[in-house]
Image 1 (cartoon, one colour):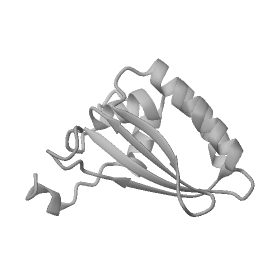
Image 2 (cartoon, rainbow, N blue to C red):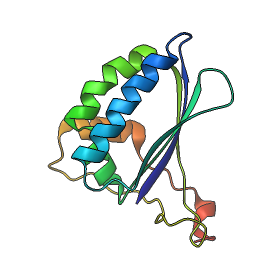
Image 3 (tube, rainbow, N blue to C red):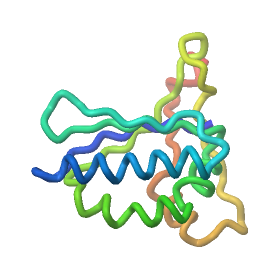
Image 4 (cartoon, one colour):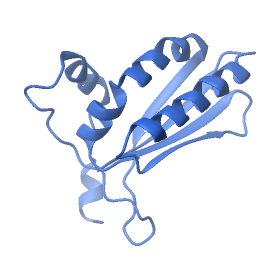
Amino acid sequence: MATVLITLKVKEGMEARYEEIQKDLYEKTHSLESDVLRYEMWRGQEPRSYYCLLSFPDYNTFLIKHQISDHHEDATPPLMEVIEEEGIEWVDPIQGASPLPPSNQQDVPEDAPEIAKTYDEVLRVAVPGWWASLR
């Protein structure tokens, strides 16, 4: 399972463009991908701040079926034009207080596309030791 919380700050004046891109990506993600558990976007309280919660059955589903999908790759350049700052944090759903399964790392398959292996170097799930005693 893989659940990630993304924090974003968009460039000044680019809020409407960012939301337009995300609405299109949301629609395509939900219509073209079958294994999406959560794919939600929110505005934050601070100006130009946004949050994204993404959850997939496992890390490789996130990486290979979503992150390197044609629709996500097509959206990446326009997103990079409007995003000023981005933070990515893997989160672990609390069993009994969330319907989502625990976040765990997986090895990327040997035959995965090279772009998946490149993304894996940046996006790899980090499972902190303190989670284990609470699972």
